[in-house]
Image (tube, rainbow, N blue to C red; front, top):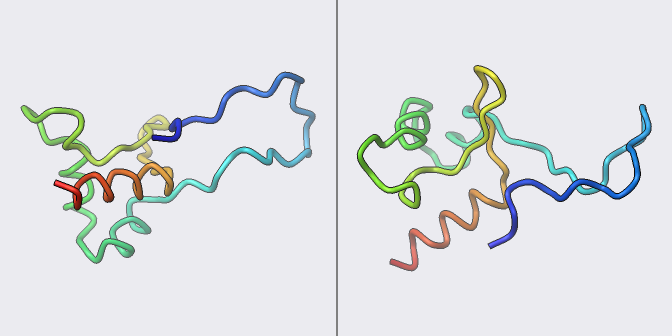
Length: 83
């Protein structure tokens, strides 16, 4: 499985310079639209208290915001359909 967060570059990032190894993170609304489920379903599946982490929808918390790496979400879906 690819890493959820790209490794730190060896040289310092300069302001206004694009970061090539970062992907656009998806919002809850975007994930819900792609999966054709409600936003509350997405939030619920990031929590799933009492269930193993492997059953949770992988996400990144940025303060109060929840974001999703599309590559990691795809890998999660592939694992779920392989069961």
